[in-house]
Length: 438
Ligand code: UGA
Image (cartoon, rainbow, N blue to C red; front, side, top):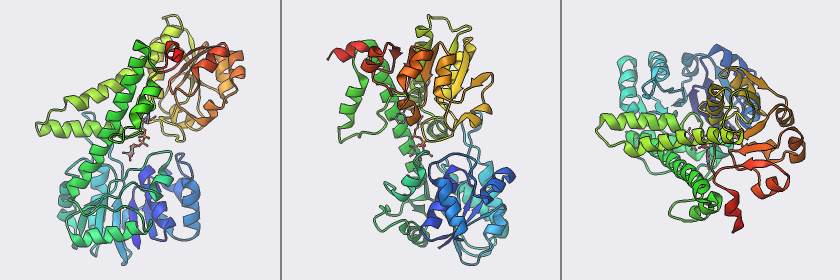
């Protein structure tokens, strides 16, 4: 099937290359000149496992074409679907900024000359479909269908998630548009669970509701880690047992320094603003965000406590800058915010991340970057582990110990009993030593 994917961020690139891999003919549009120049050489401006290879392979085999202008992409008379995967960054008040969506819609409207299905792929606020239809309708010369097919990909496992989706959600206004999109998704595999047709707004809300639920799960996990420390139980054992409850599920039960990534917070803030406008009580949603913020401060408190209650002039080592392992993305990364809080308290930061240092350099000031974790240990009075990269889990702890003996493990990647045996002053989340007596 011939499709166009407008916007080559993380979602657009994965979806475009993924559909190409399954034999579709894909034209990928990237307006930004710098990103376009990289992409057409097969280079991704971010790190996502396996994706660059998949882009290169499909470009070489002629199923994936990168263009800079939307108009160039939609000239194809056999084009059936346009997927909109442009960014929807938050405005200052938390509402999503739809300017890139509007630019894309206007460009499509100017050049389109035959019926296609135009589907929202990026995370958009509820009711964007209605707005999109209006913007397109103002200028378009031909008939078109609008649709919403939200993406549930996780950064760091996006390629795997694309080929193994839990479910495909398709919201359309007509049966015909649904059948077209169903055909496209069927190309991923015969066993893919494609849900029956729903309304465009239902599909938009499914995305928001799903992300809110994940974020809620994280808020519970973070609260359990804080309570574990306070009351002397091991939160990981509790969360693991909780996760076996089939009514809820094992996911999002790993304590961390707070939830990062571009979507959970942005989407929940968007949901809050939309619900507020509609007069819905948003207290629970706001509480999720407060708990997430408290978890970041909680880690800062632990670092401060281990260093004697005063961070002024102290050298704090940080392992990990990205918002989780296997991605170079630092947007909303708890590591970045924790570093800034530590700096405000007068700490000097020495940091290392396997993939995210270039991206972090754009947002952080006054950080000394190292070439590996051992160098961080040699330069610091204590280390905070803020991202759970495998490289950190597999560190030679005795070599670390030669640098510093203080570790605050905000990803629970090490075993407290072993760390104690090795002579570390060690703290993690919700696993106080007294809980190990059991
Ligand atoms: C999230 C959702 O998982 C995707 O389904 C969704 O498509 C995506 O947002 C989106 O809306 O685009 P992602 O942002 O890649 O995906 O990140 P997650 O894997 O959900 O992790 C979010 C944060 O929660 C990370 O900082 C991670 O470290 C933290 N986390 C996650 C935990 O602290 N503990 C866990 O058990 C799981």
